[in-house]
Length: 236
Length: 354
Image (cartoon, rainbow over all chains, first blue to last red; front, side):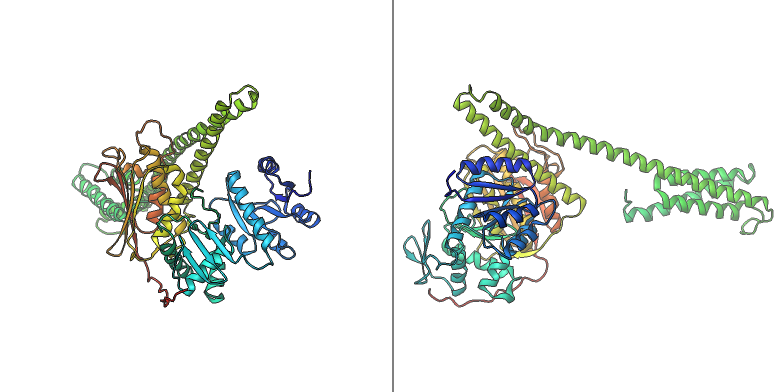
């Protein structure tokens, strides 16, 4: 086993989930270490310095949201939380507590690997200057020159639309919660005004999506937030 | 079971009328019978009230019986005065027997109701466990075949089995999700978290989710740009569109066009989801919203919960959901969302070039 394989820490009490993830992640070139409880997971995170953490929110000994908070006290390691459908509130809590992304059980391995790639890539760029140019499909965003083009043609955005798009582009591929976006774009006093955000997202879609009712770039994550696609795949 | 408020008043009136009738009969027959005989007449009224009208009318009948008996049949007549103390014993007996009858009748009613509920629950349970077992059986079958014949299976067969596992697992996931939604709706823990959202966003999320299932079916959306924001729980409303579109995927042939159209109506927004498939069987426009109802389509499976969930969610928003037939004979679902409350204003921003 070469040391270039990224180490992934999996914190999940479900034996069958661990089995499935062990098989698929080792096959995809990751080195997996496993914990069945929050306590074990926290100590392995400290002793092994993993490159990424997969954290189940339904652990027997501690709420996954608290685990996220504890980890964020001392590490910037990307955390992807795993939770069941219908628990949007706890996903949002975990994301606002510092998790990087989430997966809803049951999920396929390709979805998992895509999320992991995005999280690892963002971690690699963290601290450095953001990529000056973001490109996906027909959309091109030049952050240095504040230029947005679609199929090579200039797109005129309002200042708020531009701030919203550039925030999403800087975190492309990652989900951003409503409150996070509102704080960044509108300021801390507007974290609860989700209708502002929804209206501006609709405006952006009208300017950037061929069919705004079937978005290909500016994706809605119901009950959680938005995600700007970073790979021009049309199917999820 | 709850007796509707309007019926309570009617039942009370009927009880009073029956007591009056018993008194009238007794009065006419007073020369041929002794006073204690009329006790039986009153008991008859109590039995009728207890078995037909419920507990409160039965209690009322018990009290009225004693009073009417005293007033009309106990000397001195037409007063509540009692000349002979032995009548007090009759009153007490009449009252206690009446109370016992109404209590017994109540127990009988509730236990028969319980038996009905029990019967319904067990038939639901068997329907559900059948629906759960079918995909599970397919998964188990395919997985064990793969496990035991790993070396000898032709690659094509292996791929087929793996596909079957994925498809059936997805079906199982939908089923479990629906059951969960249904139980949430029924237990009343479903919380409608209203926010002001553009309909387009909700429909867009639902379309993204069912895209794979819809395959090559052409999808047309007609959403006016000036549609108002709607006060809904976006996660729940998305579920409604997901279920409606899932049905299109299940019940229409591949390639069948689907249309989603919305318009502003008086006090709300109306959305029509229609397809050009075979449509609903005539006369099932109401039934499709019942739990565990399944259209008589060959080769399709589901628990028959999707539309019941849609109805439950739309009801929780104070809206309406109707099923019908589209102009081209396909299924049409029309839902309305009322605009409750005051829509928030989004400050206008001056457009400047970037």
